[in-house]
Amino acid sequence: MLRQIAVPIVAALLGLAVGGVAVEYIHRHNDQRIRQAFAQKERCRNLADRYIPENSTDETSLTLQEVDFSPASNSCIAAIWSFDPNPHGTTKTGNSLI
Image 1 (cartoon, rainbow, N blue to C red):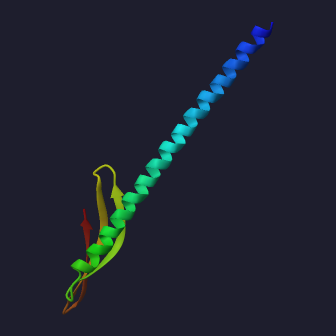
Image 2 (image 1 turned 90 degrees about the vertical axis):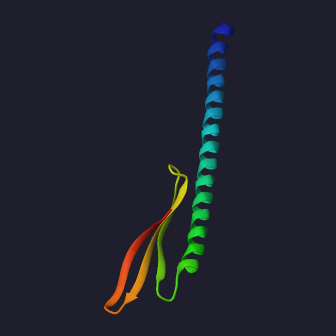
């Protein structure tokens, strides 16, 4: 009689333990992935912040619009606006930095 009750209880506790370990593994894996993505985006932002002053001149002004990291191509992508003054007004063009 005791064995008939103990087997389902042990199986249930074992299932809970295995499920808890699986959930904890998934959480740690997701946390690590999120930290890596944040570090990549921060690296891209720093690269773009250095690019703007290095490539701006008296004739051309660059403005950073957006920066992101592309995991598919493992590269940084930035939307940069270039403002070129001309005699008829300011010309605005968009560029991508990869």
